[in-house]
Each structure stands twice: as structure tokens, then as C-alpha cells.
Length: 374
Image (cartoon, rainbow, N blue to C red):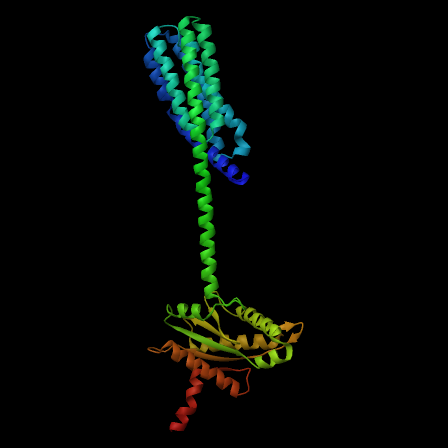
């Protein structure tokens, strides 16, 4: 277990303990009512109401401070001392029971001591994830209770009650410490498992992204392109081919050629909308999918891209100026994806044969056939 794991477990345990203590304090008046019911007609009403008023004042102040602490975020490093004070005051309120209610009836005394043991047992569950506050709480309860027994009764029964309460608290503290360790270890394991699950999700997402991404340019690859097109109905595509790319490789080397491809991909993204899709098709060829886009609009987009590539160098050191030939095609009803790619590819060849650095559409590729047929 690393120091970081221990810190996380303790901080989480503190937060859970604060919430559990708030829940326990809201039910504390039920314990008071039980004590009052036992003491009624056996203990002077003045003593009952003095204890009840003192306990209620301590309880109300503690609950208010605890509520504010939780509202701000129960952080261990900020609220440790305040929380220990709340726990101590809770022990004080119950310990004062022996000062006001003990010594009036032997049978009642035994019942009230059993009630204190019950309170100690219940609080062991409340403070299970932050046991140091529990030790403070039962320490104050024990000290105040034993002192009250000695001062109020001063009899052999008081010594017996003090011994019995001391033994019960000691045993409860011993077992609570062991349980707390297991609880904190469980919290640590939960955080560790959550961290591992998060790392696993990130790793899987990275694997999926790597499998769908072109490693050189960072654009989507052919696999991602095929998946994207499965969900499209009305769209146009641009097929882009960098002109004379082999000449760039021959003149500057393949490493510079790779830089040119990366720079071209970056330049291309500047002219696309958020919903457009761009993939490296292979070599120096790229495909852009324009969803819900007509042929005329797709040609306008292609022309903006062509001008944007031609106007400025793709690289400055060394200076590499390039142009691009673009073929545009729009998906027709009943047309296959392969036929659409073939139409865009034919448009690219038409642009290259016409002198490169041009935009041509699949409509233009069928015009010569229509003329020759006539």
C-alpha cells in the first residue's frame, strides 16, 4: 500500500464518517427519549431536564457545525480538528448522563449503564472509517462517566459499573480498530480498482483510436472511413491527390515527404466543418466526406481547399510548395461505395490530365462519353 493509497483511503473514510455521524446525530433524540422514559418518576425532573438541556445544547451546536462542514466538503486536512471536537462533545453529552441520572435507583443505574454501552456499540459503526475520532469520543464518554459515577454515588456499585464500562469500552475499541483497518483497506481497493478500470478504458479507447487513425498524419484511416460511410445516406466526397508528390520525395527525401503529408493534412482540416470527415486513403491521396452536401456546394469546398493549398508553402524549411488535384462526386441513389470512389477517382484523373491543380466532378467524366455516343 503506497502513501498515496493510504491518504486517499483516509480522506474517503473521513468523508464517509462525517456523513454517517450526521445521520447518527439526527437519531440521537430517540436515545434521549429512551433515557427519559426509563428515568421518569424515578429521577427528579430537574435533573432530567438539566441533563436533557445540556445534551441538547451540545448536540445542536455539533450538528450545526457538522452540517456546515459537510456542505463545504468534508475534507480531512481542513476539518480534522473540528471533527474531533464534535466527536468529543458527543461523548461528553452522553457521559454527563451519570452526573444527572445515576444514583437514584439501583435497577435504573444498571439500565442506564447498559444504555451507555449500547451508545458505545452504535458509535463503533458510525466511526468505523475514521477510528481516531471514535477513540476520542469514547475516551471522553468514559472519562466523564467514570468521574460522574465516583462523584455521585461513591459506592461499591459505582466501582463495579466503572470497571464494567471500562472493560466494555476497551474491548469495543480493540475490535473496532481491527474492523476499521479492514474497512480502510476495502476503500483503498475500491479506489485502486476504479483507477485500474479507468486506465483500462483509456487504454482500450487508445487502441480503438489507433486502429482507426493514420499514424503519420493523424487523420482517420480507410477502416474508419468505411465505418463512417455506413451511417451516411446523402453526401458528397472529395478525393484529393497531391500533385507531383513523387518528385517531392525524390528531391527532398522521404522524411520531408512525410512532413509534407502531415502539413497537408493540417492545412486540409482548416477548410472543413466540424461534421465533415477526412481520411487518408493511401499514399498521397485523401478522402473528405461532406454529409448532406450537394455537388455544387462540394465543388465550392473543393475549390477553397485547392486555393488554400496552392497559396502558401506547406513547409518553409525546406520550402515546399505543392498543389492538389481534386475529384468531386455525389452519392446517387442505389450507387455502391466502390462505384462512388471510382467516379471520384476518374474525376481526379481528369483534373490531372487537364494540367493538375484543378477541381473536377464525376459529372464531367461522363460528358465525353455522352458526346461520343451522339
